[in-house]
Length: 381
Image 1 (cartoon, rainbow, N blue to C red):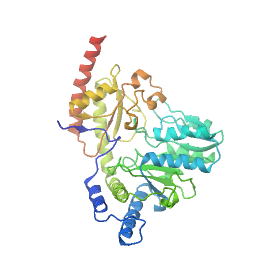
Image 2: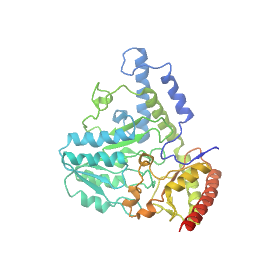
Image 3: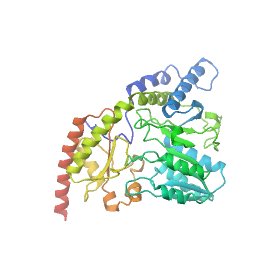
Image 4: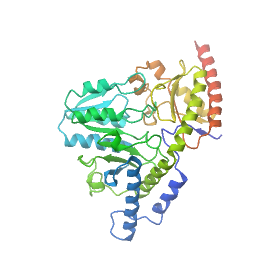
């Protein structure tokens, strides 16, 4: 049975053009980018080109891009690296952050930091009045994601950053889910640091970047030979970095044609969902164009995901990085959604190769599956 993939917020397939760009550095151009001979020089040139491509995708200088092993490392590198340079005060993160922001922030509590969660409304957007209130206390670090990985809701990061800078705090945004779906401009967002990842934009897994304001100095998370301006030591993953650069360039070329097409399919899906009586989370807030997060009252999300998988459609019951947890989505709980509804949440995330007819087939499959599960629930009661 051929599966149709609707889980692009978890990861995306490697683009053929990205693979083609990577292959020479997996085979004949295998040099270490720090070596002084021709093999090393060719590798260094490739890394430099990729750095320029990643930088161009968010409007910064190449020197501001620090390559990492992915979004999780980049988020940890900023939060722990900033904490290592600043005296303990308050770290403020939104209540809907990905665990790779929330957990390192929580770890700072052991070293004297006060952890403050910034509340969100029922629409999934950070409460700006709450941010202003939180920043009345001395604050060193603020982190608010640009687009939520579950709901797709876009935050007003620039407004939060304005308040953070006024409070003399360092402002960070995790832009992993936003890149390639909406315009992402480091300077317009007014942040000190930004996290990006390759595998959400049809690039390889295992490579990401931390983009930094040149005036910010961090304590390195990984010490060693001084790679990446001394901020991330370790032999560069040249094929991965090359793939990341190529993926960024492709994302910029296709985004303005792709985003409206994704939004049209997402709206097609949600018209069908509304007709079936689904509740759609964050529907009244600005969202990235490919994402819909919904629930059918009385049906467990995990059950629905398994049944849809059997029928040939891959969707998710939440964030892939939290898929081992049986607890309801922390994002939905923070939005004030009751646990019984949060447990039913299903995330549908479109990609560049999806088509309108696949969405229609999914809706037919979903309708039949939901009807069957409702009958089973009624019999059980």
